[in-house]
Length: 322
Image (cartoon, rainbow, N blue to C red):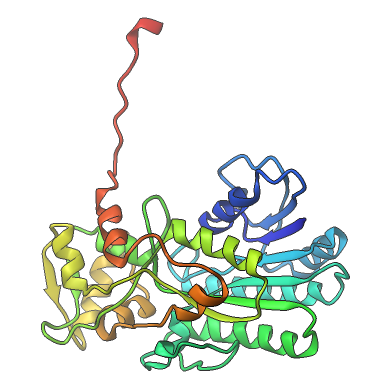
């Protein structure tokens, strides 16, 4: 099987590539602005800027994949600032679906999306989600994902012979990944929503993100699927698990909180504030039924794993080897 992974250099793309790295009949093409930090034996990697749509399109068409995994989504304040994240995401999406028209062997596209497309509505609680539908974003990242899904939905209408799968992930956290919400929750103090009015949110572990992509490839089903861990949590609960003091915040107080957290190296994007203040609950029934996927980490597991990650790992020196 020939698999092209757009965004292979990121934590999501690298982890997904490793899921397919042991297949003897699998060959992979990787494209990103940075190389993966792990050795992927069955992949040929090309370092290409996300905005170079022409070169990315050429590489994909020449490779003629059977499956394209679109992990080239740049979340604001993850690997890119909000402005660059939007430009890079839009360009990467154009290259994926533009190239797809010239790949005769292509049978499926699996793309990263987000539950932020629901905004503050409760449409994510419906058991079934339709690609490009129920899009009511209120944040920049939500609009970015809604635009990407709209491109995917237009392509799916023109090419019903190719399965287009959108995985709408809850906020992604885990150790060793540049998650804006994860960095924020590990600060010495955590601004949260106002007491008694905090929203409940779901999270998804980075390991489950990798496995969800693999499950989607195996299932080869069209549609949009919510991916989230079991259970919910509030921002103040997460802070208590990490033994961090939390600061109830509302209204203009978030302007001060955003300035303070940015100075501490953990800028908080508006979609993360939306999750902390309004919360967001989604149904994962469709993913369980159609993709045969259930997250192995609960929302609470995600938080505990985040806080159990040591910032500095000290290794003992073997002085006998001198």
